[in-house]
Length: 538
Image 1 (spheres, rainbow, N blue to C red):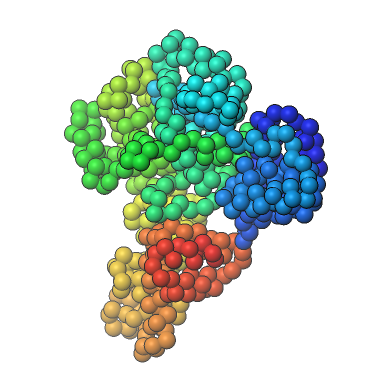
Image 2: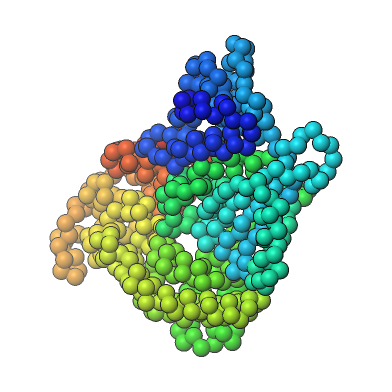
């Protein structure tokens, strides 16, 4: 890094230096090593090495990290390094003092009526000597960030141009010539809110981090991998994008930017009832299957598409049918058959109420029917690749949440077996007695039978477990702890509980060791915030 920085010392313009250093800092963005925080290890290691070098190239690196660093801690450490090297008499390059020192001029959003993506154009000036309205400052460059709403609101691409007026004029001309295109100016504070959410969600996908429950629900898009985001120009511009978004103004006190709509269960139910009572849904023959399918369509729009269940597009229906449903939801056979028909009715209903042009509604319906055969192929028996029987999946996923399968198998592995099929009501994980029975059988090979033990079940099947002959207080305390932990794992609360378990499993720990570590944290934590902090430290 220091050798590469030497070549940048001759640069004259701070934007060129920012772009070059952003690309350098993006070299390890998204890299993962189990048990290590790569961003912190390499970022702070680079700062320490640059400070110790005592060379102009090291000073240049520190100036860049102070402006573009990933965390406030890294930026503060880099600033300290800059001061230390300056005290030793090193001269900074001419552009070093101007890194990150830009003024936001304006913000725009470009897209189309489908709304699959938003191209957010943020214009900045570096004319700090001119006093007046920021909007009157001469633009120096524009940062363009592409927000993918079908991908859960992540950033898909980023680039910078100095031909600002040419870019804006092209966007205006396209919007005037094409009724389907849209281009509008937005408040910079609103652009900051939109891009801050996109940056956070992109980081969650790239780093594999869990969202903070206190910040509201965030559903990571199914099928989207870190490599989908780190392989192109986004990685090279991500550090610069973070720094530029921080320069956008925060909303004035009492003024809230457009938030992501919160769809509570009652609002979702009302929307579903309105649709099911409409003319478009009148021909759906199986009302129960139609209701279940409608709930999934609305959940996808609310949780993945920034609270916009009424938005429809060809790309959105393809993403829903071919990626989100197979990855998150277990449908009954009759629901699988009904889903394309319910989705087509939803497209007609929502498209009309969203004032979507008829040709756009038709294109979206074409996408539904063109994806139907592939949907049935992809979706048929989602348990087969996992080696599970359909009955085991039904026991583990009574709510149909496919994303919960791994953590529930970890909490109650016997539910994935055929050993407890003869007494599903006695091994029901939804009840305290059922959880206790499953855990006692799992840990000690015992089961406190609800009916007298006579060696055989009433069906004639041999009972292979040992009946409990007495209660051991130590065992009962262990079962109490494991039941509290298993109940949290079953419901996925807090979200970083399962993330901590996965990290320990990735490091080669066996299941009993992981359960013991999680149980100790659960017992010692003082409240939910302390619990999340302790889990993140595992």
